[in-house]
Image (cartoon, rainbow, N blue to C red; front, side, top):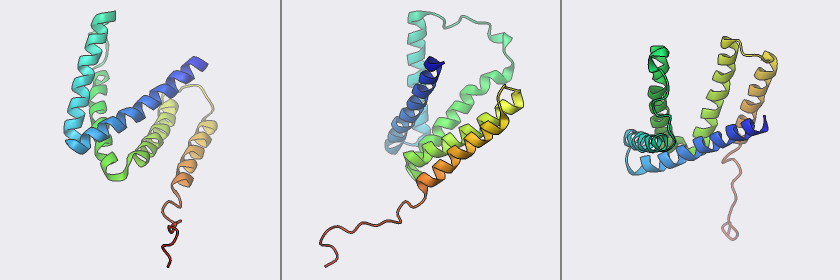
Length: 152
């Protein structure tokens, strides 16, 4: 279980890093163009890795329902939206709102799909995370430090 938790945390770090990198590219280009380059470079990378280690075409694509292929579309929208938001509200705010959306939708999907676990513990956990996000953002800009000698 520790390995899975570590991999999940590492995946979260990669999401944050990816948003930062793509947001930086969007500053020089646009949200759409940075999303395009993100996906093109990703396609080349995953193709090279799959050709090296195998498994590029190892399954039966017709066995999946049509909607299972919409993940790429959702990913493109997510990346373009993140790149656009980072320019406007900053990386930290964007990350916090993405995490909030992931937590709420994760609980809703778990409940809808009948995943095992205590509903109230999940709701409380999400509530605490959201409350922590609010506390972390409250008061920003309210404390103003005056440089030494500036009050003269």
